[in-house]
Length: 215
Image (cartoon, rainbow, N blue to C red; front, side, top):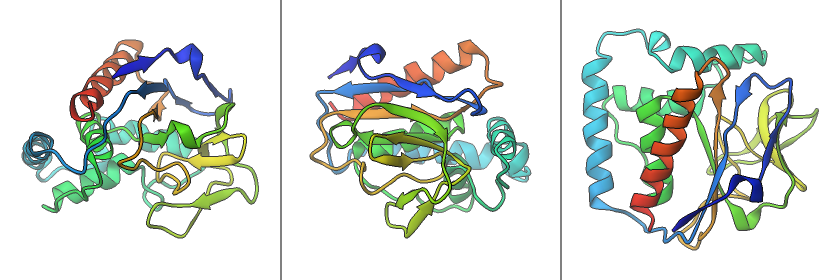
């Protein structure tokens, strides 16, 4: 598996979006239904998080607070429309297991829990360039994965020539990852307040994790 140079699949970020979206693409993937080592890593991190944040107000957790602030900058109440990273953390802190989908999706959930930031993950073959991270327009939305229509009007989203296909809360059924996926686009939805060094760490460690479990 190899990383596709970003210049070969650029994702433009609108100037008015209070996010950093250092997207990257991967090719040569071999997505599997499950992986025991990955399941153990998720279980171990979940245990660590329950111990670390026991009795802590979740909104004050490093990472969660910054992502919530970026939602508020978009005019969205993050306690009503939760970032995907916070939804994962809440599930873990309740002692519930994460839903398992496949090794690529599950590995990205592991990274989302590790860094407490939301990601988008899309089958590159189902996307029609150009791709742009922007605010959704009035009336825009898409069919979500295991969900009804997802409204993105006024919210951060990623869109291609056919329209929006993902956002920091939930992704679309149109571009979802399956066992047949061989190329994927990964879009971190990061607060602008994150320093460059932290952004590089998130991107590099996430790419390594995805390669590890889907190669």
